[in-house]
Length: 83
Image (cartoon, rainbow, N blue to C red):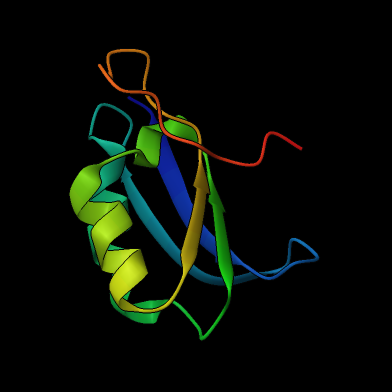
């Protein structure tokens, strides 16, 4: 059995909110659970496990720009800052 830790961290990597799921659970579950805990920020940096149109739209609705690479299965690539 393994677990997965989803975290909202500040720009220095310090965690502010944590959510634990079973390892086989989709990252979307963690994203949905932490969405209401997001602080008022300009950018959100996440890995491709959080690449979902609904999540990008939710961030946009909060005025947050997503820096999340697209899943390999995407038909149309998403733009993000690779740096």
